[in-house]
Image 1: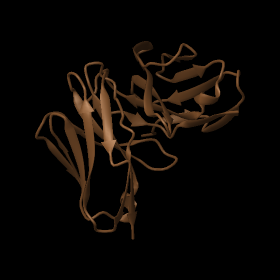
Image 2: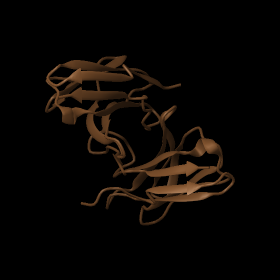
Image 3: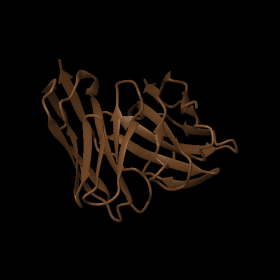
Image 4: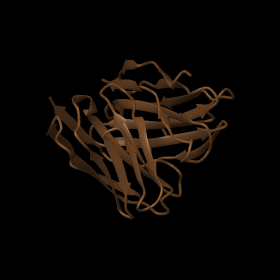
Length: 116
Length: 109
């Protein structure tokens, strides 16, 4: 069974640009969550999508947005990039809506974004 | 607000030297506490879920325990391949994981 696939793995952008990151969940998983990981703040929750609907949202500005398609693939977008947006963006998938039991988050390897 | 603190931030051990990592949390309506391992350049990898105080889970040289305010990850006779960052993440009523900053564990041969 293929794992969670994130593309691109690395990218460099300049301030003011926008970026779109893609995540393909494990086959059959309907929930996709996004996290931002930085050395200073650690792993911070961005949002979760389940069956194309946003279920949960973290404390990030509106420049951060996401969506989920009918095949469960998800994208996140960051507009008007700032230097502080440089981070590893991690996508994770699970089958059901809840957490626990067989419903554990499986993470991808991440997309490392550098903003210059 | 849900809060998680892991200690120590970094720990260096000799191969075979046992120790424990701590995760203190304040979460309303704990649904579960998750432990993950993260290797450099990779995403976190699931280790355990604990649901209630007194529960213990084991996997190879790792044992996780849970109280009402803390979780411990005990590592017994570690090997160099156990070197990684260990992350704990409780989940409360909002059913999202709140991650601690992690403990960076280094096992020297």
